[in-house]
Every structure is written in structure tokens, then in C-alpha cells.
Image (cartoon, helix red, strand yellow):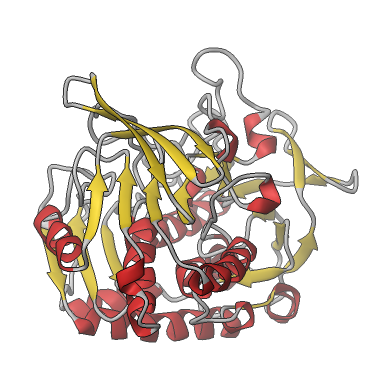
Amino acid sequence: MATIVIVGSSTGGLPMAYDVRKHLGKEHTVKVVNAIDEFQFVPSNPWVAVGWRKPEDISFKLEPHLTRKGIEFYHQTATALDADNNKLTLDDGHEMDYDYLVLATGPSLAFHEVEGMGPKSHGGHTVSVCTTPHSSEAYEQWEEFCENPGPIIVGAVQGASCYGPAYEFAMIMETDLRKRKIRDQVPMTFVTSEPYIGHLGLGGVGDSKGLLEAEMRNRHINWICNAKVTKIEDGTMYVDEYNNRGEVIDQHELPFKYSMMLPAFKGTQFLQDQAQGDDGGPLVNPRGFVKVDNLSRNPTYHNIYALGVGIAIPPVEKTPVPVGTPKTGLMIESMVTAICHNIEDSLNGKEPTSEPTWNTVCLADMGDTGAAFVALPQIPPRNLTWAKRGKWVHLAKIAFEKYFIRNMKSGNSEPIYQKYIMKMLGINRLKEK
């Protein structure tokens, strides 16, 4: 009998637990360790931040749903990992043994890398949509802002690897301001480390540059690209703007009354603690992201797998200001499937062979319309790139939110992105490479 421990239970970890429980024999033990006791549907956080959703609309308690499936749940934070001896330490001091470990931890948010950045609860001057509690805090400040509006700055700082929510939140705020009939009182500026609008950390997807530039022009949102945020004070953001040769060409002091800037990510703290030497060591890179091979398995510790935002992926290209590579829903889902098959093969005495397909399909909400992006595979060169805009994307994302949450409550381990989004977009067959 084997013990499979999954650390993390968000949009990657929870489907992972369901998939392992479904496909492995009942004689094996499945355990989930998660720092919070709720599942929260992270893609809906921008809606929470303007009051279009309440936290309870996009969250539910984990334990009843996991227990019903025969999965043990531990509401604990992992504090240490002894990979040589297959031991995970929890914050209550308990040491948990495992035969297979799946790290679906997500990131830690590196607000501290930019002085003055982060929500008030972190001592900063900006808001965040990275977690549902942060988004609730952002909504409180949003209501105050709308009573006394002024300039908005939104975007992503140097080293960020998740750009979609910045574009989404910019458009969602703009839409909400128009609904409140105060848009004319709010200058908006999009500040991003990307070399151009629509880069998305992916080198662009189809005509994402033209599509998103046109959308921002239509909404009167200015932008600064190749931007490095050097400091944030209460009401002022300091930004160095670079050219393509990496030279500073302008320095901006931008006033704001409300700002949401996405931070760079690092691995969770117990994984950062694994880092050693210039390359981070056998398990993680210097920022605490887990090193994985083409099987989503650590190259040194073959019984440790990792998926989602917490894995190490190099940037798709060199840029004047550091830009990370995103890990998107469909990509994460393919990691879940591959890892489950590989653990199953190992338990049956077979050599693991399943490789995830690193493809991207993204539905980006824009408040009253939306944009869909397809990149097969995610990292260029690609077999297919595609970008479309329309109100149907906005409606599709609303429907997908309900579909995903319902499936997670029911314990359904089917590939949700492929079943829903790929079918909706008419992409019936994904190529492996």
C-alpha cells in the first residue's frame, strides 16, 4: 500500500486529489495538506474586488468533499521537507511520511521585492487580486475610491509571470466605473514589465498585441511597457521605462488613488528553504520553484511530482525588463492527468511515460466583453495560435466558473478545461507537441 500526499488544494491540487483517488486502488492512502480550509476559485478574484462576486460565491469548505471521496484532509501548512527520507513536516510539528509527493503549492507573493507594494494588510499601498481575502480587501478600498475617485494604476511589476488578471482587472474596473457613471473622473494607466501590450509572458498569442491595444485605446487606458517599478509611496508610483536595448529612457512619477499591481512569484517558504547554491539545488531553483522533467517529475527525486504555478519554467525569451512565463489552467490540467498516470504506472511496476501537453487556452473577461487566446503549445514555436474577442467570452467565463466550482464540489475528476473550453472553441484534438 502506498501513501500519496498532495500539498495544495486549489485549481491544480484539488483535481489532482480527485484524479488520484479515482484511478488508484482503494488500498492506497491519499492525503491532502492545505494551509487554508477552503477551496477558492482564483480566476474569479477580479470580480470579487469590484463586488460582482462575494467570497462565498466562489469558495467552499474542503474537508466534507474530500472526506466523502475517501481522501484525508489536513488543514496545516507544510513547513519543511526531507526529500531524502520522504518526510513532510507540518506546522503542528507532525512528520508525515509519503511514498509519492505531489507539490501543487502555488506561489508565495513577492510584494517585498518592490518597496511599498502590496495590500494594506501587508503594509503596502496597492491592492491585490491574487487571493480571495486580498480581493475582499481590495473591494473595501474600491468602494471608498468610488466615493472620491481619481487616477488608477494597474498592471504587473518586473518578474511577474501572470499577466491575464492585470488586463482583466483593468477592463473590469473600467466597466464598473462606466456603470457607476464616474468613468470621466478616473484617468487610467496600465504599467507592465512586458515589452509590449499583449505579450502576456508568452511572446504574444496570435494578434494579442493588436487586440488588447485596440481594447485599451477604446477604453482610454494609457500604458507604459518595459516598465520597472522602483518604489511605491502612498499616492505615487515611481517607474523606470526601458528601451529594447535595456537602457532607461524615461522615469515616471505617477500619481494614483487606487492601484493593483501583480507581484513576482516565488515558491512557498518551505520550498524556498530547499534552495542551495547558485542553481538552487536538486529540488528547486533559486526562487524556490520545483524543478521538473518532461514527466512533471523532479529529476533527482523521482517520487516527487509538481504542477502549476510552483514549477520552474524559464522565460520564453529575453526581455529588457524580466518577464516570467505563466502556468495556465489547461496546462495545469494536463500536468494533473500525466502525474496521475505516472504514479499509477510506478505502482504497477511500469516505467512512467506520460508527458503533459503544455498548451494554453485562456478566457479573459473584460467586464462587458472578453478575449479568448489559444496557444498550442504554450511556448513558441507553435502549431496553432488564435485570439478572438467578443461578448460571448464574457458569458463563457461566467458559465465556466459555475461549471468548475460545481465539478469540484461533486468530486468530478474529468478534464474540465478540455471538456468545456476546448469543446466550446471547437478545438477537438490537441497535438502532443
